[in-house]
Length: 309
Image (cartoon, rainbow, N blue to C red; front, side, top):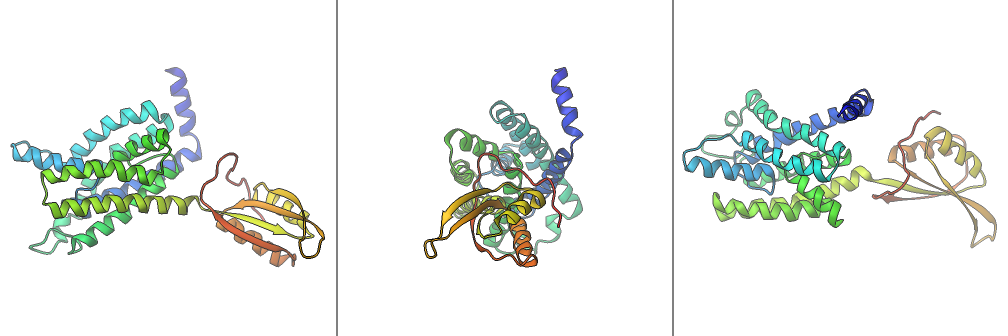
């Protein structure tokens, strides 16, 4: 117990902890806004813990038990968090605990700041005035938040934990795991909503999985850069010493000229690639450059330690 406490205190003192804490907080504010303004008013039952909470809230109210959706979200998340700590590790678990605990209160905060009842036109139950626009807005907000949190080894809680478990043990894309688990949950919507609304929710769940994969790929996208130049040593030094990345050197023979050349390869972010191209122009270095997108990287690939011109 003493070692765990010591490790936790050391983690709190790091910049990474506070940066991740801020990212999770902002991400959950976006998630809470999406649920409160677009999911709750139209009773959109997507495959999320919030969707289960809405179903349970309506069913409990029908038998005389009134419970807020935010409270049910909290209870469901507490159960799923036990699974997160047991199978996904402490780092993921701690961040997800925080995310799960603040979701309900953040929904209440949005209600305090700007109740959706005050912006909905009389006679409607939709903020945007159209259920499909509500669905689209919710999916975009939720998917962005999920992708950002997954990228720092966290989640919004709820069925994201289930999706992460499926992703870990069955090696499926995180978006596919979200869709499958979400579609199963989404079917519970038939208990309280018309078939049309449930169908919309199921479509939304499927689109959510696709959108999360898209945003995840965008966040993880890197440039695989290949350069052939007689000044390859200057390029190598700039990549290593200024950008702070590694690179590989390959001996090659030009198919057209037959000349022996050296090819430099490196994996860079988009900004780093721009800095490299600026360096080539500034130093008037003649080079043949190709670049392609890479969305998955395994092994040693660290954040740069420094950058200077």
